Image (cartoon, rainbow, N blue to C red; front, side, top):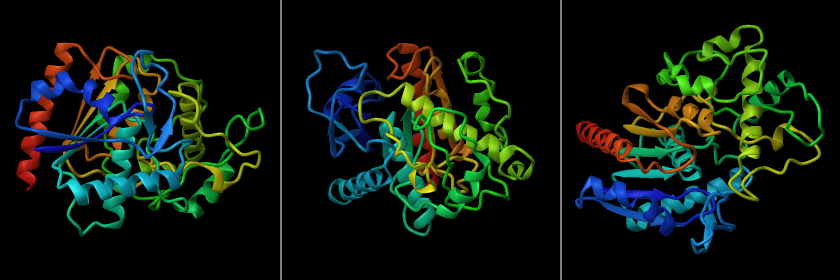
Length: 325
């Protein structure tokens, strides 16, 4: 099989190839991996060793939908020129970009062949839409549920955008993959919240639940700001907080579409952005998704036991993809 590989912020295709070398070796020589670079030059990721040479790239900065669209175009061009690809592998921003690309295709081109048959995601960030007008009416509607608690310019005062009707109906998130029940997920540091975010879209009709959703979306931005891999990786909010300034998040409560292909999600138990990876799981068909936790932070795991688990899950995904052909 052939796989398109998308690197994280502040690295490159060459660096990502080295990060995946052990896993690819374990998967065997029958596969081909194509590594491409993001279109934006940037500094090195914060946790990258000093001896690793550049250049370094990102796919988009500051949760920018226009830049996300440019990266979508780059993926489409790569598929046209070097494809087809059986699957996609992404890490961090590369994982969230792949999710965005697949979901956008499902929403806008449901009758066309899917770009990938399976996917492997490491430590996905929050997923955004490439559409700057991503249901602007929903953004304006939900903005009234947010009350700015303090520091001007610290966080935005408007909520999420939505590609579907987020006020009613149901999705396939019956149990949220079990990720919220993981002991390490409960143990990690979280800000105090007065309201819990609902797990089902229909529950947004209950009092206080839209406000709880908006609080979670704002917290996603705060978490990304506090754990940015480098300068330019987070949004610099304008002084005027308006619906047009808010990132066009794809959240499982406000996006009806689901990634329909087999997916594997590898999440670090100590990752400060773990919640974002868990939300990414919920954007996928739960019957075709596997979640693997490893004892570590926001990185590619190196322990052989974890890599063997990923290899087993990968073989499952390839088998499922063949059954769907």
